[in-house]
Length: 281
Image (cartoon, rainbow, N blue to C red; front, side):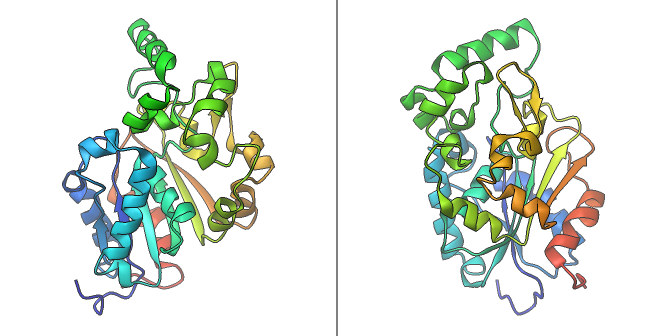
């Protein structure tokens, strides 16, 4: 794993929910090809992968990922890293930025990240059956034990009961700096990024609302509120406004459903960020 052959900042990759690093090897290989093998690229596994991505408490996942990067023979010795993520991995990657000061993150690129939470089961939004399932989750989602046992429930956002979400969700209100007492470190660390790049799949059926991938959310009537119209953005509680006004927050809508990666997308949008003014050659 010698770093002498690489000229670009190494790239840490985190996969999504109910998955393993080995399943995303094709994505890793696309990134390696796109950067012409000038950057070290590797998926960092959290726990055992699929099981722990669901059933390990999300704060613990972030802490474990933080420790794994520090102990890694390449990432741990690098002065800074780029982080690229898929789906749930976006929460882990952002957690490294805001909650892991030992790791300096240069750029964060998230594909299909549920940044503003989810309000329905993946691929199950509109049918009567789906509504029954959603209602069942809504009835238990803010129980502390349920959130502690099932990681995705920590960013479940029931737009029909936002007061309970703000009061009883153990993760997302704090993570997005929505609470009355703000965490200045979250804002400072996000603003320290060179770029925050948010990718939204145009036909994504897994993240609902899809605009969550761009920090959009439902209001209390079920209408989508775009990032720029949210209180979090207007108040710059997470540094998103600062990043956007300085040209460092970039949003891309890309074709396909959840996890529809292509070499063309990586070459067009990822390479200019991870290679910067230099060329990946």
